[in-house]
Image 1: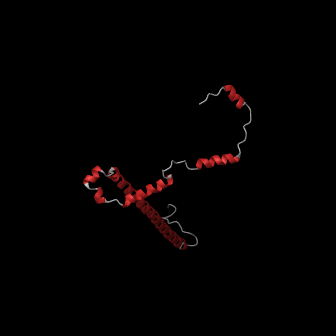
Image 2: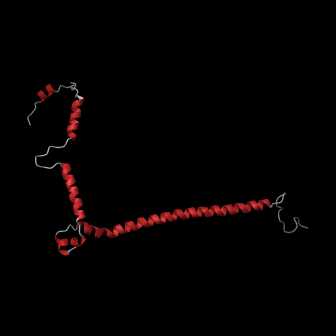
Length: 157
């Protein structure tokens, strides 16, 4: 890098000087250049082609998977990628418990909701019966009201 003296820098950029406005077209071109693909050397495939090729290779490897070949002892211990298998083996109890808890939580939440609705209907039925009994008893009250029941004379002898 070339050394720039402070004096030449001050001459080029004086304090308080207004910067020249940048044309909008130049900004658009800079933004467009940023989103363009990077230059690739000759003979190298484009990045998009390599992505599709890798996806194609992945789908082919999944289609050609053979359980009997994978779990054959020599292939399993020498060539196979056993990491995912042992991770699945290690986490199976945790996964099982999580799925079981999620299932029973959902079932009990559903049953709890049904019980709440059933209890509300039962309460409503009992309240309606009480209201009917009270209404029928009030219709049987004499015109003067119910007289108090006295046991014995009201005044002493």
